[in-house]
Image (cartoon, rainbow, N blue to C red; front, side, top):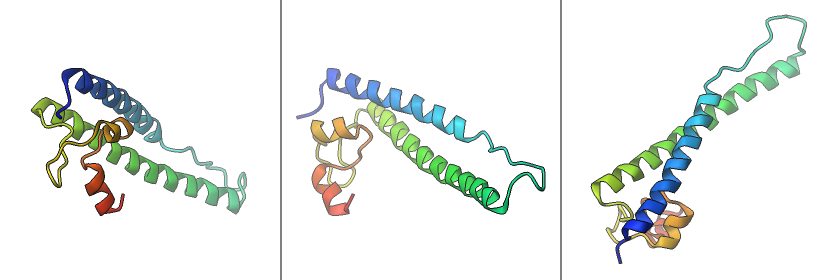
Length: 116
């Protein structure tokens, strides 16, 4: 059975809230870390930690941007009227799956087959 308008509004609210939170987190990560310019202020280990943190921030940013893209895709599907339909097999994605992961593009069966 297709999602009704109330259910779509419910998921739209969740997705918009998630989108706003991700955009906020991405913005916070885009502020470059501050590195010390003093040669003797930090030991080599501390400098390595700073570089590792910068790398972690980049990786986290990539994950956040990917999740944001998934959410934007789900919101676009809502506008087109095909939200909640599995991209692989075309069946309706269960309410239970969407409640857990509102940006899901696969039904439970296809997700299991895919290995996610």
